[in-house]
Image 1 (cartoon, rainbow, N blue to C red):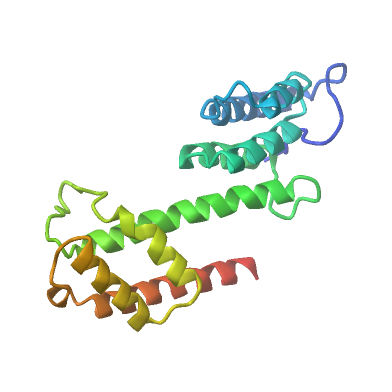
Image 2: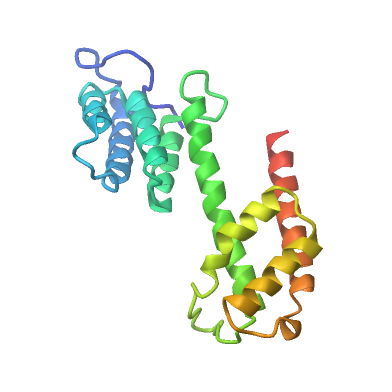
Amino acid sequence: MTPVGTGDHHHNEDMPDQDLHPSWSRTEQLLEQARGSLTDSRDDALGEYRHYVDHNELGLAFEVLVDVADRKRAPSSTWEALAAAAREMGIEEDDQVHGPSRRVVAEHLTRGQAWFELRDLLNSWDPIGIYDPETAFPADEYDCLYGPLMVRLRRGDRPSDIGGFLSQQLRDHFGLDPAPASPNEFAERLVAWFSGRRAGRFHHEM
């Protein structure tokens, strides 16, 4: 794909070549899609974004939106739109100008994927016994465990420690006897899953 002009030059008087117009238009649409979820009119940065778009500085507009989305903890749909805009502009993670912003987008997408994977693991474990895989309902019963589990996994807690945390949650939060759910065995699965994700990311970055 031919990269859209993303540098630090204004293009009011020197518009891109004709064959770049479709890609330019697609990039603007994707940026506007991302902008649509960032609706705080008091945020001065969004006015800066509009300035860059109006002057066809789409790479700089992309950087502004990444910064705002990062501060506002934007939803995954925002990061997907920003990633698509980056692809349209030919911005890679090693880009000398926009690479740092592209890496922020990649990191947020990775976190979102991890969230869905961990949710699937928790629902397949289903210690309460209420999850229906055919209807995928209720999908959010164990979402309260996501944050505490990811903290423990990232800092390298042992499976026995994570199993202890799960046992405590089953007892105190869910009102269950932990033994039938085998929390220590599930903790082993979680550690293996997280280690596999981390190894896969490291291999990708090599």
